[in-house]
Amino acid sequence: MEWRKCYLDVILVPLGFFMIIFYHMWLWHKVRTQPLTTIIGINARGRRFWVSSIVKDNDKKNILAVQTLRNTIMGSTLMATTSILLCSGLAAVISSTYSVKKPLNDTVYGAHGEFMVALKYVTLLTIFLFSFLCHSLSIRFINQVNILINTPQEDTSPVTPSYIAELLERGYILNTIGNRLFYAALPLLLWIFGPVLVFLCSSTLVPVLYNLDFIFPSSTTNNHKSTSNMTSTITSDNDDDDDDRYHRHDNRKGKVIHGSDAC
Image (cartoon, rainbow, N blue to C red; front, side, top):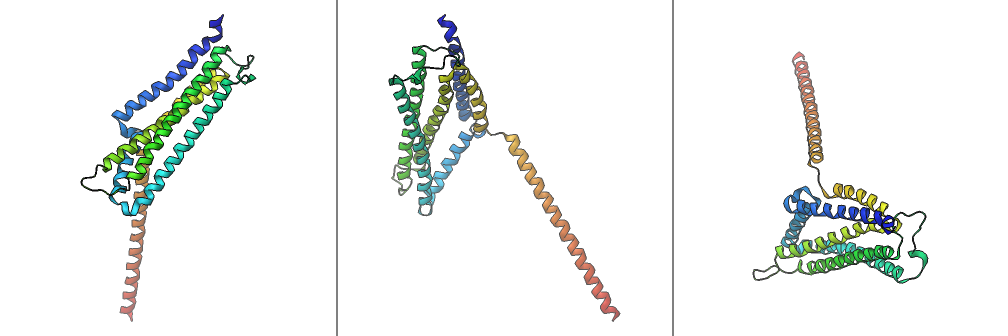
């Protein structure tokens, strides 16, 4: 009888969660082997070029560097604050005796026992705590970059552009991990209302993340081809207009010469 109540939770929830885990393992493999096909790999290479450019011309770009890093810190602070607030709310729900912990027995599929309800809230609390931890560490690394990027570059200085780029990359990796943990918690948040919504939300989240994480060369190639075709068309039209103007000018000069001869 107990199996009949919780078999949907045992099957659908791990299936949806492992779907997200397998996608991110495959994404990590692509970032390691083919970085230029992913947004994460291209952004990582662009950040290294950005650090080199800022360090090379630091006298003119120091304010730009500080403002850019400050905006990144503000984004990580917002996500860390949101995660810890959700953790506080979930901890209050777990420790309370209100009826909010009791599921809607008539409308929710899956198990309704005390153990399953506690498992739902503890799982969400754990994921949001790890998300807060990752964002906090990301703020730490980016704060270090904010100071070190304006240090004078000397031959004996251990603070090199590659070291600064490595610190910045660690901060952004932790920021990405914190965001992905936050995204993974969204399907589990629907677990309160049943395991079917968890599987449906996970099945929807993976294609959305795929379209956001990868670059499709065919679309960019078509855009470049269409741009080049438009440029060539405009150039040919301008050349035709120039030829027409040249012929009209020659005709006018010929008429003027014939008129002077007649006189």
